[in-house]
Length: 234
Ligand SMILES: *Cc1c(COP(=O)(O)O)cnc(C)c1O
View (cartoon, protein in one colour):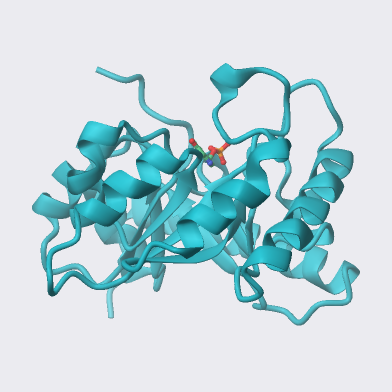
């Protein structure tokens, strides 16, 4: 077979490099290599990049804007890949998010959970959701404040068409990721006291995924380290 064209080779090299670093951190944490879901966040990149990633055996991709997610799915209808929605969702976009995503990482209020639940028709598959927790005091960063976690977990766990899988967070800008992710682990314990099967911890981006792995992350959301720098948004 001919070698792939240069851009795919460069993508493959970055992917291999990140995966090696992931396995190194897993070993350091006493975990098995490969014992994690690595989601490649493709926001602002063209749909073509997702197709290239799938050629490289990537099975999980992430988007943070509903319109972009829906557009890429429409452009790549046959692609065998799980789409993760990791961005802030407006309640009035819940139906579109639900139609396009297999997993929603960013449920941070009961109203959004209700809207996602109400968007299911009789034959809509159950939707995996995570609760986004805010690790800062700034409401603009998104996520439920830790005080509200148990109540939100109880609310979501009672919705028939959603399956509560765990929690998600973005590291603060002004705190070492290791300490923030250690806190996140205690929040995960609190959610599991309400919903014992909600074991997923979605944490770790380009700048901090090794720390997230050490703190027990089960799902990484890695963008630019794999995709290269994001194009300027048009
Ligand atoms: C963009 C984004 C990522 C990936 O960011 P990188 O720093 O490029 O790895 C992860 N999570 C969320 C919620 C994002 O919006």
